[in-house]
Image (cartoon, rainbow, N blue to C red; front, side, top):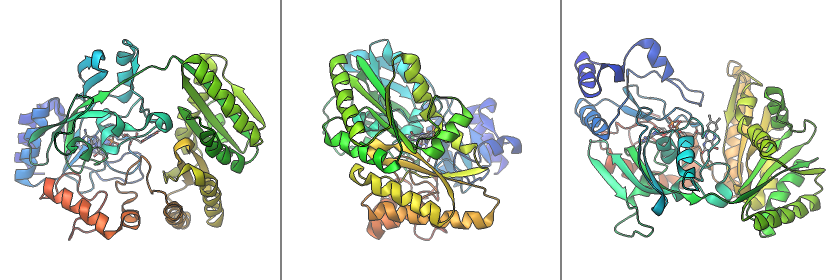
Length: 463
Ligand SMILES: Cc1cc2nc3c(=O)[nH]c(=O)nc-3n(C[C@H](O)[C@H](O)[C@H](O)COP(=O)(O)OP(=O)(O)OC[C@H]3O[C@@H](n4cnc5c(N)ncnc54)[C@H](O)[C@@H]3O)c2cc1C
């Protein structure tokens, strides 16, 4: 990058908020996906105006810019594929306004997701979306990926809570989108255009989120099964019985053992699968719902059903689920984690299909995920240095995505397309769907400088 451009970056951000040393670039060359590209500079804005000045500069000198929260994305979204500048949002962490009367909170986009709940709790409120990465992902990253989480089944995902956004458009204009009102139909829902936009259309600098009252009571239970099929069938049966648990997480035997080896969370090593189930609300209704859950679990031959008797017991169960990915990551040198998602009713077929694919290609797999919303995380455990194993794994991934599409599902429930799933997107949404995305991108970013090369290629762009 030309020295004159770096000098301008220093003028905008100050020396302490600009990095250009080679060793520093390495730290911003990857996220949680297995790809690495080093940027030429990293900048840390502290105001929306600085982001606007950066984009005006980038547009003038035609340098690519890749937004980044905490780099916890699982689809390669924050990797600076075409080099240029990484715009790291993790120093924009202010709480702008907490408005309990209207159950709203406005924050800067770099705030860590889990920093919201302690503030909201002061007024008996909480922020429902809770990705497994809640302790380190940023709110801006959550909005850009439309992150889901463990409570998605009952409470929905990030898009259900976004009320207003401040966005810097690729040419530097600052726009405020959405409204703080409960109802708002003045124009298109433009704020939602940026939810799940994966940093391709604009940089989110401020977010106003809706909050909900904290449920008065929670019942948490672990249902243990001898067969994967029984566990998968139980998920559909619980919903069919009229209960919407706040959490219904699935973990298979490989995941349970990986967790227990990583950290003792009291999970059974010999079960083929478990479901971690939580109901919440008024005490009597949460308990009554758990009785129905138990009846469905028992109908499906569960070998054991334990209701947590204390907060400590509950926390131990959830701690196991939260470390599942890290635990699986410690089994082999690398992993490929997917989030193909299907309707709940075909979950047993999906689980059977994943296992058949892993066996066909002789790849180790651990399956866990948000079973209540059909969002499984089949995780292939591999060694990237073993080219032959990698070739088998890529074929397994191809078949996995095709299986999800054949079952009327989707190639991504929450991790986004980024780089990882780019080759599969057209299969899902068709050529006409890709053209709509390209048209939107061109409208916002005519020079294709904001996070280029992600999600889809622009016409003429090399794949
Ligand atoms: C252990 C673990 C568990 C996880 N569990 C879940 C889960 O349960 N549910 C789930 O949905 N995801 C999960 N994830 C994935 C990841 O945490 C989410 O996608 C999260 O939203 C990414 O946030 P981030 O701040 O790290 O964003 P990054 O990874 O830095 O960026 C993600 C994308 O958003 C863009 N972006 C970031 N900030 C902005 C901004 N301010 N404006 C515009 N674009 C921006 C980037 O360009 C990139 O395309 C998990 C990841 C890990 C490692």
